[in-house]
Length: 333
Ligand code: DAH
Image (cartoon, rainbow, N blue to C red; front, side, top):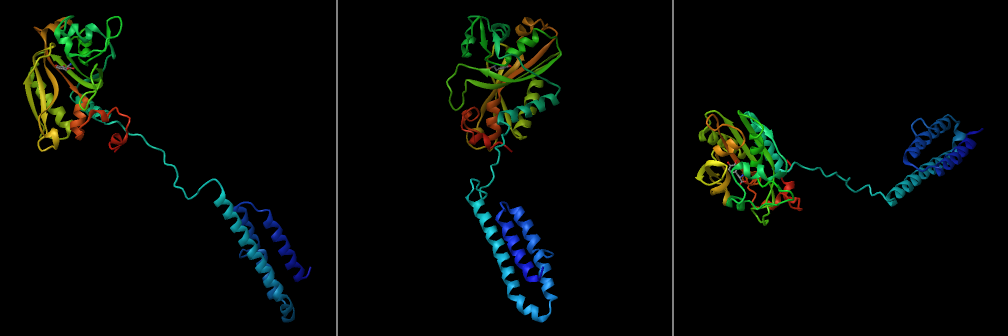
């Protein structure tokens, strides 16, 4: 075949191949075959260069024409593919969908911190049932039936004398009924009160109950334990504690503990009530089969929500269980 026929055949073949192309990869492969540095067009150009001058004069125009036809053929095919992508349902200019990553709830974060501090002091982390028996929630804790102290607990009563536990102190009663000292336990669990929900009350909240029973235990041990824990969890050594005498049927003497963070904004810079505590009542030990002549111990119960609010300067307890997740997302770090 002479060079002119070869050029014409190449053009026909290349344009026919282009008509069948439907994706960018195949188009690029084809371009390399025909127009690449060692492609078919290059080979014919080289053959043209070796022609005598007379033949070159005759073939020159044809060579340019074929070259041009191929180039514009490829350009058109590329443009057409690009248009097809633009018109397809996929908008490749959109940022990709980023999966929403959840975060650990601030209550859980502070709970983990409390557990870390208490296990460091040799306490076991335990819990009991949410559906509790009257005796563990009340009677064994020195709150007999018809005692007015029951009124302080707005109780969700269930059938058969059962109830949703109103405090984690129920786990104290369960433990004393099962185990002799030494006892060193901490409970972090949900409790339930038939209470109006407002900025500082929820009907479901979390308590931390700690109790330690052994020989020669006194209130000094309790105060040291509380100071260590509260300062560690609030991450400040300057947190102040204040004890006020108070009444809880299961302790004698009983105290409420207030804390104050010097210089903290808003109400957290003033005294905030945090927990109830002190020496486990001899009657409670006796009811559990522990001899108060040999053993003594302390107990305390605090609201984990309150502690978490202090830790982060949160003003409204409804943030924790509400449906608006914007507040909670701030604690995802
Ligand atoms: N159970 C009490 C409440 O829910 C809190 C409490 C007070 C727990 C004094 C204790 C304690 O262990 O010693 O209101």
